[in-house]
Image 1 (cartoon, rainbow, N blue to C red):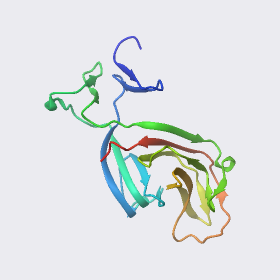
Image 2: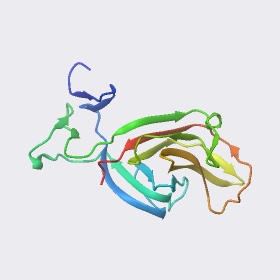
Image 3: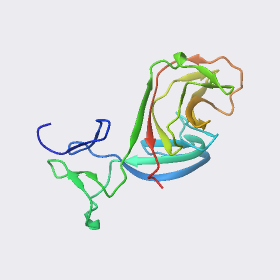
Image 4: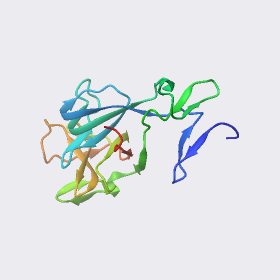
Length: 200
């Protein structure tokens, strides 16, 4: 990049640039049971000691569990009416960043190529990932999910907090019968962990 605007964080990661539109916070919705959401980019934040997960392939109730759903989008207009802050535009005059809106703040990028290799039992429950981020003000943006089959029923991963850690385990449809042997069709798990402390 020879011209334009570019801003890095303390870890050397690009945060703001004039040639890519910034992803900004849209809203926060309580999830208590089942919820339908058609936003393309969402983050899931489990309630303490509760699970939350996406239900893939459903025309309604595609989010389930307990916690919060955060939505983000790329579509926003200039906030110059506030008369303060920083705005960045691309060479065509399109707004790519404004400090008057809350940006997505990624704190971790987790990619597990084969979850069978990270399988373990924690506190009596199957877990494929466990890490402490020093706070529960975090949420997860699922990118790649394992595909699970159990006698035709669809399974997906669930996210939850336990003992100060973010953990990942199975989420099984309520009509599934426990104890069936799972057949793994796809192994990769990829998600982003974001800071939600500014999203009220």
